[in-house]
Length: 561
Image (cartoon, rainbow, N blue to C red):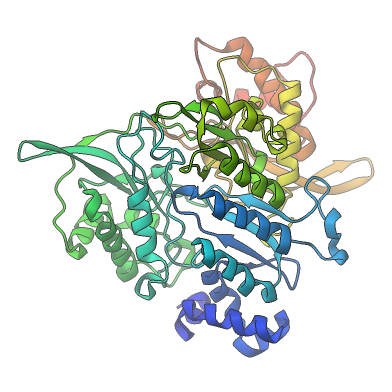
């Protein structure tokens, strides 16, 4: 049994929630917490949604938002809590801690969560109290348990939706949250559920993905779900496998419980490096894994029916028609997902001001957000709000597709800084590169390490943090750099990108991208997207283009050891 499993066996991880209240009341330091509860407490605190930051004495805290759907009241509380509690101490720069965002900001994640930094343990109970008043929680935002359940951010809004799966998302989330029987799994357990034909909720890269389907039973057609299992990124990425099952909406909770039970019973708890569910599906094979689920499921699961997924969208930026007459929803672009808590609260108040009583804030898996149920005559006023100027619904293509993980600003695992770099690069690239008019977004994802929190493997352009040794006349210099990947996508033409070049110095990336897009514009076939072109061109030639060999001006990408 590995060390983490030992910590989880010593005390049920959910018991740590009561410990937080005690630590806060007594004002314990990190050293005092460890003296009292041992080193394993840092692992168990993840079940409260709390990660210890690399800056001693402070936490990142993660708020779960099932399906990404928030009421304006909930969004306002989240923003206000960021403004009140996510504040850096003077020793770390205070309000000037970050030159782009200051402090008191929040991060929208690729899993439709909200993360806040610089949180002190003594402030957590008060934050939880404010959360409780509006139905929010951080419980199981992290840890080896069921994480936030993903969904389409436009659930209930779009015409291409087969049915609204948000009630199912809420039911599954409610079942697993604070459920002690399924809170201690071999590793994290990621689910996504959607009724959207465009698979905005990324079923192909989750442990469990329920996607819309239709089946004829006794002469009548019923809507429900097909199931995909065993997808994931990080090291050893894998696209999910299709199961031959049809899951009626009313049986979705039981189906997900049976999958969790299967993972709980036969998942590998000894080696954390290979105990993700995707390795179990790969080991057993999809057919045997399906048999194991059926053996544990307390309802009969019919064979699969008609698949209703037609592609992958993953982007809701811009002004869109709702299927409700006269209403619009607006997708705002938040580069790398970071914005001020006060700005998020302003967006919530704008939703109340300009929207109907059903208005909501929706978080998207591309780190952007939507405001829904806006009468058409109110859209211009909404777009005139101050926050809408910074987070424009009409961004350039690189800004629109930019995703960044936390990076080494706070994360103990990250090798490079990501948030500031992603924002600066996206805006610089929008100014320097002419992208074909029919391409709305270039998906550029930057992860600070191999953990893939920014999902680089599914991006047009993916980066993975590295250190690079440069040799010059004055000797060797270690600089931040990255592995450089091209050609990822989800959907019918799903494929993980190729890591075309390794250990590229950060300062060489924008010139390399300029070379690539110059060649793409010259060689592009009718309607060919950037990722399609990079797949058509062999990797050796892509490397030569980036190094300037095929370009009129050579800029020379340097290489590390």
